Image (cartoon, rainbow, N blue to C red; front, side):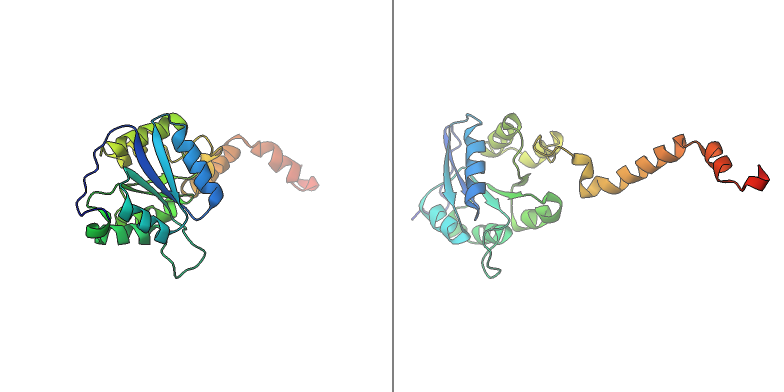
Length: 199
């Protein structure tokens, strides 16, 4: 068992843990992390319980945790796992870099951060070069959350229509209606619709 306060010495190459109950998602995230060419050793866990066992036994530079970890509502989800790791440093280590992952950032980011996540990143993951910047920042204990905001990574290349996100949908509709009203040929329409005896 790893001793309490075991230090993480940032140095490349390094080891990360990906926690996700979806086999396909674990493979996609693993592939994306390896594609950064940072020399990352990726290990995988399919549940909160498996992740806790692995973290007790080994040190990880970064731990990526999906929101949904089980179809069973009685099992820990991503924020629940992060909270469990944070409140038991004697078992899991003092300075874990825990990163939430979700396809619904707006919905779950607050839960992840309140539980103790260092940052929350979108799924699908950002482009390779941007992902590499985030991973390096996390590994060096820099402010990856600020980097996410600065680089506008909440809309990666894999999201072809960012304007249709929930935050921008209503403003986009208003703009479209305003443009339509501005260029609509109102005089022609009024004349065509007027009763014949008034023309």
